[in-house]
Image: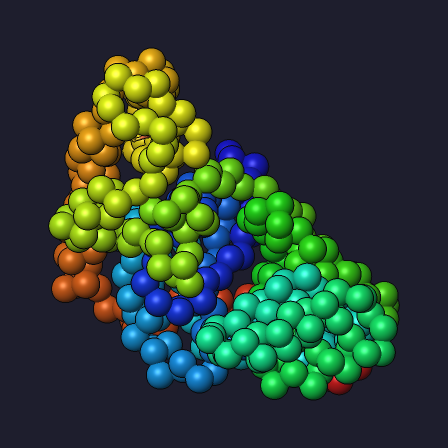
Length: 363
Ligand code: SF4
């Protein structure tokens, strides 16, 4: 028997729009690999979507449906894993409320993602308004001065720093702790978040003399480099993404636009594949990518041919995914899948939330 089978993994994604290849290679591919090894709970984090996007809430329902179809087309299977919508399982809010009672605000103000995202939100909101942009930098600087009165006051007075945004790590901790999650799949940069979750579990247990909340361990996942077409990190805000189900024509156009070694002009110029976006994608889609790197370095292949082959390789995989997704869109009852998953999730989460209330002296 697989010893990992009983370990629980919980992971969620915000329904904020269509997925791109950075999401696939960075997160979803690992989810697909994990579903045979662990008891997985994958949730649509619709409450989390509100923490930084309450003004865009009209798209959440549609994005939820699209995201679940995306998951299924990529190979996630609701028979193997539990899919649910976070707001269908009210225990997430209940445990977050209780954890909020034991979580010092200073912990949340020290959260590096809070500071970074705050600056990013300011930038997006005040794009083109220099004076406001300066204020954005000021806010972050003051926040970075760590935990002094002024930094906290500045953060709390920022109109972007709503209570739900500051407190999202508490909700995230509840998401994980409700299911006795043994491990949480994260990249190294997300470790501070998991540490916060562990701190909250420990403080709750200590304060209420219980061992109810299990401290989860990190499960570091293999995350390959997925650059955007311009060479920067693939991100919607940079406008450099390739969709997981990108249509054939625009896939071709995007690969043709990819950044390559600017010193390689002619076929026999010796190239530098490191830093070349086409080469980064060959590593993902071409089993013979090492040979391609060598050919590039030795001036035995031109960038045109290199891109042409990449387009064929990517279209083979992405085209099959498109077909599968279209079939699912026509046949799957997404609301039914989510309702069934929510019932399974509630069976576990409600019990834990009730036990947490008991431990806190409420029952
Ligand atoms: S030959 Fe291929 S790997 Fe080399 S620089 Fe051109 S596109 Fe990049």
